[in-house]
Image 1 (cartoon, chains in turn brown, orange):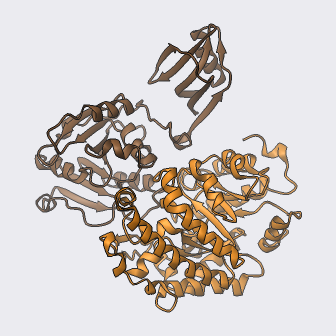
Image 2 (cartoon, chains in turn brown, green):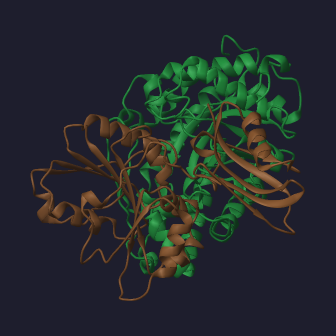
Length: 270
Length: 358
């Protein structure tokens, strides 16, 4: 079975340079599937190698058929050892990953251009954050010799599970071994777009519980048969206003003052 | 008239507009990319002549009795008229291979007169197809033209990721490009409206997935509003569709002055109904991939039931539709099931017990 690598990142983040780096020391049979218009500057030397092929997936609606097209190409090309998918720079990584749900040989990586990262977060639409939140490996592509701690902290805040690597990709990059495999149970964050991936949201107004245990049991009962991904908001627990957060299977509680009461539950109904 | 219906689509639409009784709700699956399959020819054959484009729509209408014929000027028409290179696949929708504009500073080098009717063969062919639809079936079923909105039109000239960068670094130049697109689109829209067609203004690149609300407000809304004003001024109908997640901009979309709003399947119809249902008719939104491409007959029925259950009581009216264009790989019989389900659950007067809860 082919190993699948989804490499996402906005225009100019360094995706293609990264692919060139990955391919340099590799001698396996590799297919690169691209979803962008125009000729990509994959190294001529690499392209001439018999073990590397490139397929361009040009057509397909950006919003709905892309994932199905990727799925088809992967199914038809299982003779390759590795298949690298390079979606369009504005593609939602979660949408591309959706096509490969349940596969154990999936790696998702997002390249983030460090210099403009923090500014871009405030500027681009949901696709940008989606690419960061859903990657198993994040590469912060740096250009200068300076402290990038605030960028790394922000990446960690957005994705608490990903392996974060810092490279100046034009000089050096990771090997295939450095890229993490997606766990099947990996959290797929959809807080910005709960309508996607079949996620639903439920709002609980005026939540009041005798205990933390009762809160958890109550949500479990209300949504029996559903898989709860996230709970967040403020509830009164044992008479005390409490910030409540359930993520990645763990509950966190913190007593607070002066917040508006209400809980939001993000879940998937089976 | 379709065998299972009691009104023609024109009669039904007239009743919808005036609040008169209808035999069933309006059903408008977007049979665009699938139409050649229904007729039994390749996509290249379909796009090769106006006759084939019209016949593909007639084949859909004969088979499904759907309430709207759709001719495709498309999302890339403006760019390809200006010199954007497209591929020419035998049996799929053409895609851009190279954008004509490499540098926003060269906008003035583009010759926008190439987008005019006398110079653009694709415009001529699709307008001719529109006229054929209206001449031959216009008293029975309305015809719409699927055509890009201003932002997507610009992305057929200049790559969208570069447009996004430009929205931050060179906003004046991006405005200049969208301004020129809007002016060209006005003239193009006008020709189709004069022929008697509805405008199906699609702006997928303006999606909330790609743009922030503030970017939509700055780079899309003023131009879309101008186009709506023009359409309204000449008595046209403007159905406005944006793909992807439009939750944050659905009110802005309505404020452009469109005649009806269509949303992608990832947006909840109850949300749309609550936000804008009292202002404007809404269309939506059965998933064209998860349900129509991959679903069984039962799943299609259930998706149609849920769409109707969520939307039937939208105050300004509801039209059952697919959430986006139906791709050519959708089995043609799945659109039969979609229509069958629409007729079953959408029969008037509505049987709320049969429809059930969302």
